[in-house]
Image 1 (tube, rainbow, N blue to C red):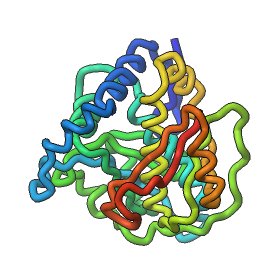
Image 2 (cartoon, rainbow, N blue to C red):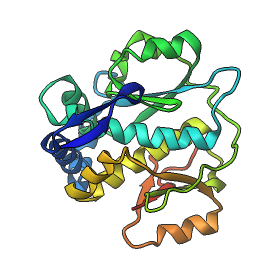
Image 3 (cartoon, one colour):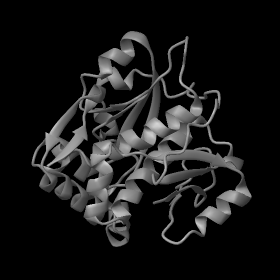
Image 4 (cartoon, one colour):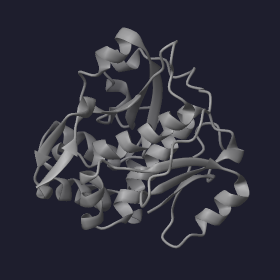
Length: 255
């Protein structure tokens, strides 16, 4: 039996089969051939066919989190939704992820503060620090409490890097791309879930039991290119809908 983190930092005991099932769904749906087939199921003109995971960043006017803190929180929150025990059992949570995995993997990052931040805590998802990641849905069916949050205005001061955690996965961001914090948060969220999908169930279970520890660093282009050559590295190549050119490698995850 494992201990898994749930919204607001509570911890509950869960059996490994539920997380194993969630991991199996993630791995199968994110396989290369499955991703190619998914491209034919989405019509940008029909919002009911476009799926996305929404992420909200808590950005109060005073004492806002640093950019580095937000990126770390976003990466952990995104993978926590994917490997939550509820994703391994029949129901709303698993269905939402399955529908999303069957389309292009999109994330929409919004900012919240005060009551708006408190309001979205009641919606299905996982909060890690300053970021809440929600169970994916069609973009035309996003709950009002989330839809009213602004997408713009998510640029944040860098702040100091968080201390590296020995043995934890590294997610490196190509700093030369100049991505906004919102864009970078979506990319590191892609990286954490792709990393989990690339590893076996035993590794994913151990990572989940530890609370998904990881380190996010924004590095110069030369260092980023070197990290991409690390054996077993998992790169994220962006579709190019916003901010960066199609096919750009934005981040890389290393277990």
